Length: 346
Ligand SMILES: [Zn+2]
Image 1 (cartoon, protein in one colour):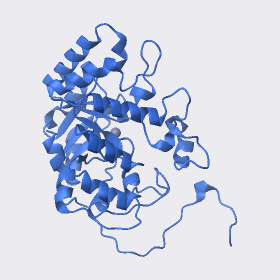
Image 2 (cartoon, helix red, strand yellow):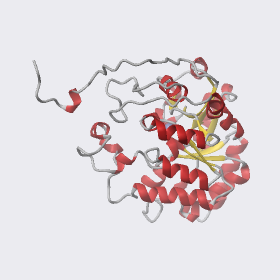
Image 3 (cartoon, rainbow, N blue to C red):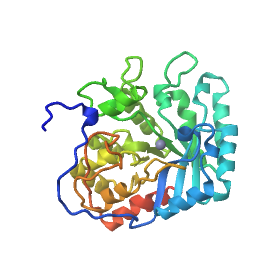
């Protein structure tokens, strides 16, 4: 019996397309996953009880990973706790820590930054991780949202460069998260399910303002190496990201959690990956103790597979579309899988 109407949440079409599909369970080269989480950012404060470090290392190794970068917004005691949790596996797990930016109005901020970063470096930390809360939720003492290009933060970027620490930023979020949650929003189902992810709020910086701040920070601190996570914050517009990469040799990107974006624009992506093959880092945003969904990334990068799922979910979580492979050459794959990360000392 034909149904005339259907609620979007009930719509789960099964593709009838018959095309060849190459399955890739192991990557062609070993991987450095530069975007993972082993601490409180994703797992919460009781993260230490939620996974067994030795078992996790084995699980990553089985997936073809030779090393991971653990990105956490911790400092001081919080950092010590995290390092204790992973300490037998520091050859496998490289850690990035952070700093309390809400202290920036304090007269001792510069001293605090220099001391904290020096201590982090001595503890074996290789870089700094900043999250979207800088820009979108953390405020300074005057109640203003902290902007990435705030000159008071410059001491962080400069000290990082002096100490040889890389700075990784997760700035903003998908563009659709800054638009109203309505029938025109391409991430409607996700935002309807978790409205807290929406940044469509006149009080907040707009997506465009965040991109300007991001660019100013990179431009004004040329000796600092910045990794802009999640496809340089703007994988919906690779032309723009490409321009930044051309202009700023101190900028790198990772591809974590943006497979749906790269994979829905295969011609543009292939040209982008070829052009910027020395500046793209591999990562999937894997979290200790949770599923490791590497396979679709391998298929995207290594094959010419057509119209396949970027996630195992029945309704894909980051937009209702499928992706296509970009069949990268071995020499490029090797750089993205591990050589670029090694060049940065990760
Ligand atoms: Zn992440």
